[in-house]
Length: 543
Figure 1 (cartoon, rainbow, N blue to C red):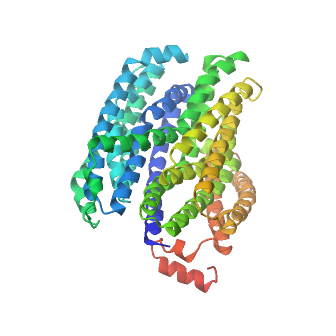
Figure 2 (cartoon, rainbow, N blue to C red):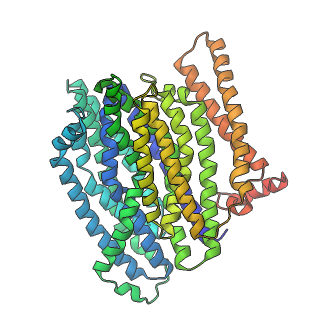
Figure 3 (spheres, rainbow, N blue to C red):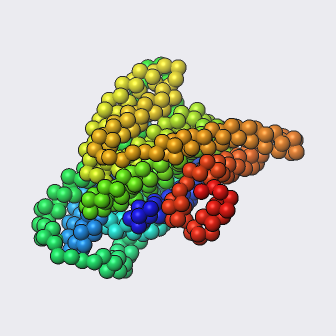
């Protein structure tokens, strides 16, 4: 494994671990919030969240990923002056963009509610979110700068800070408001303010990191004379916009999917006799499923974020062999993550929802369907990152356009049937499959990479199949044993059985991967104490 590929994988691991920690912390936001406001309250939150996510997608993901690509290219050429100029141009436009988004959200609230037919109370959620876009944009620009140098830990730490602040402020405000007799919708608005405070704290941390560390990281690059450093600000902005617009739209794929559901669910459910309260509760149940699949999606987002600057550097230096290696590595990691995550969530959907939302465990069927969708989400997200790295950022945009048409058609066909909200979840699975297929076809057409099908597909499938059977029987066996000991079914029994089954599944999955020799010596070399691990596996003839 080359040094560049090693840096990419390490970057992905750093962001993945931070993402897992951040999502674990975030659990203490969703679970208490569901306990406080129920499915209806979460429905208010979930109605607004996808649209808010679309509006901040440029600052949250689009600009950081676009900027990381451009800076990675400058770094590969030793053009530090060009990298600085690109960053400064991007930071200015990011701040202006964030301010515009905040103003638009505040002044258009009533009009949005009127057009969508949402409950009146959603205005408090919109106002709570409206504080944050400018801070999201500032943090995003600085994240993109560091990621361009393949320095991932500032982004990782900021994610953890953001989620801690969100939990502390959001839940506290919701609790205080409810205890003082506030409307349910106002309490959910308080939780939305907590989300904004999280983004503010993240931005403050990123500003501190930039001021204290940027010269240190720049000094690691051997600067060379380059005409590119003479680019005008107009050219810089043009480069950013050309990349950031399609990247931002592609980054909002999940939010666009949710927004389509929110726009069609109420109308389609009304056709078969269901009122707005039922539709809001369905939206809340789907939101709980989203919160769970976001755990593995966080890791795949880290992989996608890391792969863009890594691939851009290979392109800038015209290193085809390294490029192909990174593409295979990215797809392999995505599949190795997607398969066990999907199987685990499908088999344990009801126990996991009962564990995380004991006062409101309804809606496990949505988690089952979304677990199937998860495979297409994770692999598709990785392919999008690769395409953006090789300057094919318009391809995900085209794929998204086709998928949106398919999604809207299927939503209108399936929701107003006995499937109800499940029809929307099935449509979402097809939506992501369409994106994956188009992106993979274009990637194959424009690169010379060849996948090692045995290690990328066959061996992970074998490990997943073994895990599937074991997890299915392990949970029921452990739960029956605990019930026989305690004399009754209980939430504690479910929690112990679920957590033990998850641990057993993870250990077994990676054990089978080791016995099938799925990992290469080079892949293991990025781990801490890798020499001891490799020596041990050599002695056991597992390499």
